[in-house]
Image (cartoon, rainbow, N blue to C red; front, side, top):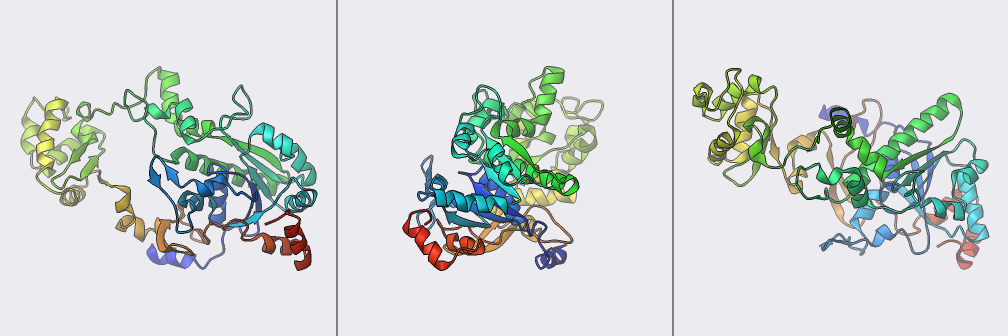
Length: 411
């Protein structure tokens, strides 16, 4: 497998030849284009002279996320693989440049508010007149319609509205970690764009596609919503581990690290679990094993296994469990993932030479292709880094570009 993965890096990328123009902020929209850039699309990101505010979002909840140039590492995640241009589309000549880009684009993406898009002439009706076959991708907080259709939103607001903050089974709402819903929305909009491109390939038509934080959060919870609406049950699993079977539970090991098992049907695995953990005596004890061969009396059982797992390190327990064919996994901290052999051999974590930070490890593209390549090819652009290059490709001379700079149309 590893050899075939390394070979694919020399192959053509699946979206080579697709051009996308972006006028967006933060991650939920732009992150979708970063994914399409992983697949080989050319992304032209338009920023104002002040830049995408995500560039400067370096301190979140007291944590410092700045690179060596003082800009945010989060901006890198949202804008890898892109060409950055600095353009004032409110000026006549700036709008002319923008219109030329739209006429030559396959896709336009924005996550500006509905009223802002209408005011700036960035709505689908306006841009489809310039390019009827363009795929227009919009991203919002809560959707195209309804009383909240023109409200801005961030990741935590989508989590709150959708019920995600209770999925961990706590009595109080808890936010899932930074950017989870933003990234899921980015994946969703990339999925929508790819689908629309396929429709255009087959039927010859452009169209508008729209994704929201709210829609994505509900889609992620498809199973939860189905359980609730059909069976009228709260699908959230209680966080209290004493209420769960040892076969579907987490345990702290001797080294302070955790291991998690998820085994069902329980009757199939209970005997093997008891033997692997050195407690086969529990199988013949009616206090802890039912006639069907499943564990019971869970509070006492978990107390027993708390002591059992405290006798060996997590890695030793993993070796034991794997040798017995049990469905267990290390509960890893994010710091461990970068060196996880399972992630490295499958190229889920890959090395990348960053122009500011040097050699770092980044997420690889999560899909293996046998006949094409995918993955990050360039860091996020500095503000206005590719303005001249993009304008030259549009036919602007060096003198014309210099004049546009002097007039404040570009930076």
